[in-house]
Amino acid sequence: MQFDDKVPIYYQIENYLYHQIVAGTLQPGAKLPAVRQLAVDLTVNVNTVQRALTEMIRQEILESRRGRGNFVTQDTARITALKHRLITDYIQELYTQLHALRMDDAEIVAAVQHYLQTRGNQA
Amino acid sequence: MQFDDKVPIYYQIENYLYHQIVAGTLQPGAKLPAVRQLAVDLTVNVNTVQRALTEMIRQEILESRRGRGNFVTQDTARITALKHRLITDYIQELYTQLHALRMDDAEIVAAVQHYLQTRGNQA
DNA sequence: GTAAGTGTATTATCTATCTATAACACTGTT
DNA sequence: AACAGTGTTATAGATAGATAATACACTTAC
Image 1: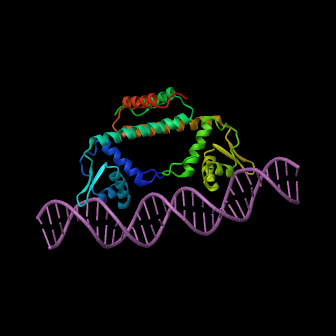
Image 2 (image 1 turned 135 degrees about the vertical axis):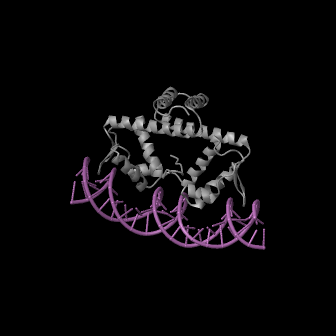
Image 3 (image 1 turned 120 degrees about the vertical axis):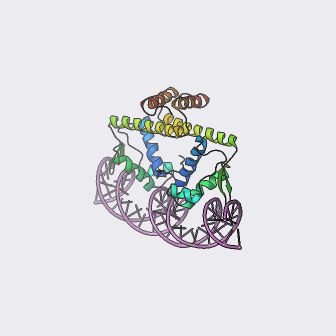
């Protein structure tokens, strides 16, 4: 995984894992790789992984079971809420930026559609 | 101005000024406030302002005239290019994130439209 | 009970960012 | 020439983030 050097790595890891969970790559109740393994996979320090996980545990998206591992919450409602939070945050960010460029709603939608037609097609 | 503590301040200032220029708040050829004044306005250190400006000068969006001030380029084509770069970058970021959440093009557009209808209306 | 696998915590060190402060260099006005 | 206004550079210190290394705590399988 490649990181943006403008943003703390622990924060990027946190968001990366949120994505994995929301996208279903990490299912509710699933066990995460061991922290040391995650550190190897992401080529970062164990402490950096731990920092990301600690915040996710605080958010109750992950549950830590000492000696056993970290597990994705079984609370699917919470995961759904997370998904909507992520989506809203991303769109709000886009809106804030484009609106600051004096683009109105119609122009924003048009720009998004143009981008989609030009590049990334279908999932 | 409020800063996001997850991103370097100099980088946020750089983007803030790009927005001012693209939005026309800072017209082509216009003189920027003095670096010391900008530092006061933004409540940051002069060196932090300077770091942002240095990069903008390197990008030839700003022109520095020692003893006189910093000026927005007169090259409107360059500003237009900057605008398109910013727009594309923001949309691409949105696309990357939402696509990672397994949303297809139609869902992305629908989500954007839903957001616009619910919140921020017209410019 | 021992070992292997797991999460958690601590300490020291390095680097990037930001600040404070000061100095230097140039331009325009008087 | 002097001064005020401007950009530019340098030094020292503070803080946050990341790393490396180590130790500790708990769980499961043997």
